[in-house]
Length: 206
Image (tube, rainbow, N blue to C red; front, top):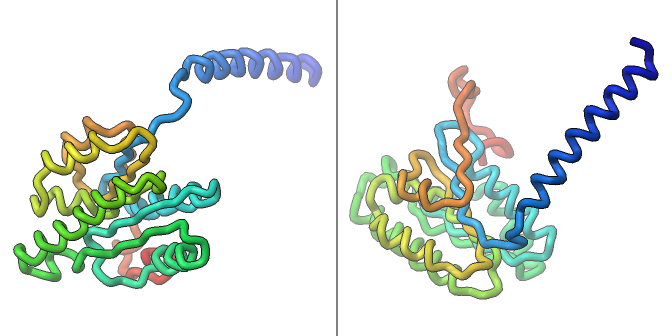
């Protein structure tokens, strides 16, 4: 097969591929819908992906909200930057209301109270008509340890307004939440540098 024949074969193959792709795109009739997205799994990157999405939304002029359920008062890089954007442009409502991981507090009543405060703030932000993306970081952890009633959370998420996008992060997402979601991504652990003794690093883990 000479070069002209190979180029022609490639062009025909791509024409067929484009026709299939165009037909698939044309079949999507819902132009805009507020999505419920879940990032879960044992692999690294659940919150990282959510904050990447937040940056994308900000680039389109959206106002975003963030409620952190489990990371306590860590001064993470994403918090530093998004809070700064919030101060400069008024596009970010950031609320870190967790008190750290449950194995650190070792106090169930305190964990439940922190989760309740965070959830009440989340409900307040869901009612804000200006917010188009809400990140509920580590909410899955609060649900896993039953710090919040699952039915209450699912009911509020289902009743949210049509144009509000919500991202829920954390390991061990409840099956009921997965069933209710529009998009579920599971981060699979293949290999992690922690296994080689590398500690959490600024700019990578936080």
